[in-house]
Length: 162
Image (cartoon, rainbow, N blue to C red):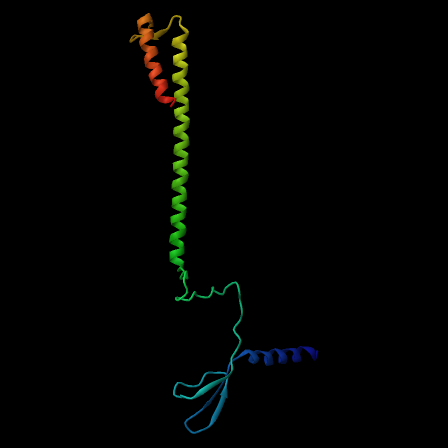
């Protein structure tokens, strides 16, 4: 039972150890000691024991770079950092969209090239080639029409397969 009151007393005594101590002389010449700073009317005072600041390395900002040093970069504000982050994210999204668009265009070009090449091969194989007329009936192409279609298909294949 005696341990608990002594523990409380020790805790109460330990608290003022980390406080600042001030010494000042009032207008009557009386010296005062206190843990509170002197009143504003006192012009001559001194700090006897300053409290040590709590060290928190994770929260401490980096020391500012000296302005006279070459290559010194001033620290950026939170707003500047946020704007740069958003700018980088927007640029990245634009690059991804451009890359995706380029990939789709390349895939479409590849499909069109394959279709045009298949059409050229079909015309070169020979045989009877048909197409549907305006009423939906099948019409056979003459040799002259097949040669004209073959030259058109070759032009299309050349343009798509570059």
